[in-house]
Image (tube, rainbow, N blue to C red; front, side):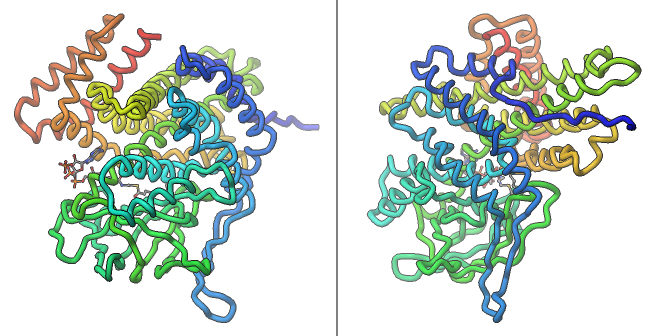
Length: 513
Ligand code: MFK
């Protein structure tokens, strides 16, 4: 019998030392720590027992667009595999959205939710994407419901929120977020969709170019009312129900499903809006600003899914290094291989510290908000750390996923090992919810408009800061002094500054734990 190599195995993520460390840090001092830990453990066991297999099945059976019925009627059915439906039902039952809006856990509901998402993502076939949009929509609605709204808006949004945060699979809705158009991906202000007033409501005409979660029940989208100016200040926010009472699409057509590099289980479509009924939400012309409540949450999802992917491939590589023998030693005993794995572990830990710090800021802001309070420093830090954490974790994950795939040699290049999928799926995290450049510019927006840099510097200079933090703060000060009052220089160095800020925060967090 010739030699057969043992394959790398997906093993229980909850039991990994790195997860346990981050869990302890994240839940330190929380009253519900034991209950949350028990829930995460049972969930992780379930992932191993059955859910991971559903995700592999969903990925192997991508969605299909069926434009016409056998008799020529336009139907635009998007057929998804049963395993994808199981992931949807599981998400509802396990409260993957509800936990973040749980009135019984205002102190740690968000932490619980994002730790669970971290475990789920590598076994979700990117069901984490519809969940991100759904959570963003729930956050947007929660925020809007605190302010003045017209009666019809309040009714529609309150009803939607009960569905989005339901734990009953029959009642649970997911939501899309349809911003991207052919004319405006990053530059949303160039969007062409028009909203024509009809009675109290509007009808939308245009093409949405990337609509993930196409099988959702609702979405938030942007459009320009007929009298509105050009640019982003002319865009308003609309609520759309995707289906009519009879289940057919609501005055829209699916042009095609996207032939994407990765995320194959996820039904991402191009959609023509052909007089789609829509309700204006909030003030007209404030669409971009209002929808930022949604994408600031999805950007945190992007970070959690990036670190979850990194953690997943890291542990596959570690497992393989303990099985594969080369040059008469296991890979894990070869000094250069061991060094690479140690560096990967450290980079993954850094990204996890950064991400769960940002999740912690969201938790703190929401805990205060539930009591009718607000701490400006926490909110400003969250505003800055959201784009920073997203851009940093996506890029670092991409780099390390490539390196770790390399550690499997030729096997990492062969499709049915499942490893190439991890590389393809990682690339989306650098563009989904904003590219690295757009997010670097968003950091500048937070610095300029909200004085976020001085709040950041105050935070990292507090308590037990190290020499490393001091050195990095000096680098930040030198860079900002070099930019001075030249807005072009700030823009030119926006990425340098963003990465420097992330490295500084990571060094600070390492001193704190
Ligand atoms: C998972 C698998 C997925 C499958 C495949 C998917 C492939 C990719 C699909 C996609 O298309 S993902 C891309 C989604 N698109 C984005 O994330 C948008 C990227 N662009 C930006 O984020 C731009 O920065 C933005 C559109 C927001 C810039 O718009 P403007 O009009 O140039 O910004 P402006 O005028 O500075 O901001 C308008 C208002 O919003 C301002 O408030 P004021 O009216 O009070 O001045 C801003 O302060 C506010 N604002 C902007 N960004 C904000 C924000 N407020 C809070 N947080 C933010 N992040």
